[in-house]
Image (tube, rainbow, N blue to C red; front, side, top):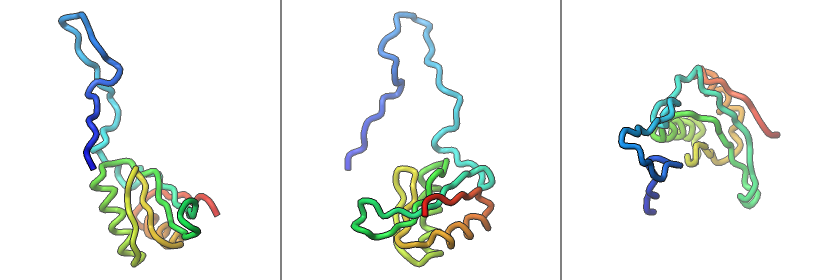
Amino acid sequence: MAKQKKQRFEGIVYSTSDDFEYAMEDGLDADETLPNAQQKLKVGLDKKQRKGKVVTVVTGFVGSHADLDALARTLKQKCGVGGSSKDGEILIQGDFKEKIIQYLSSEKYQVKSFGG
């Protein structure tokens, strides 16, 4: 897949001022990962658009894509199944909701359960 080119300064088209400076937002960068104690993760089950097969979904991770992939790899190893991480979510094949909640709690993440 080709990477999409992202506009550097969204919303600014043109400025006539010679000394105009672009103001960047002072928010959390996408590359900064919050410590485990500050992460608020939600764990639930989903089977929509998956032909009736159940997957465990972990959402709410704030941090870099590499750290998300590392957490997904660890969860897949703990459960002994496959899965993926994309769009800020971790998908684990099968019903491993309780096992994942226990592991994330032991790693000092703030975990909440959602769904049935």
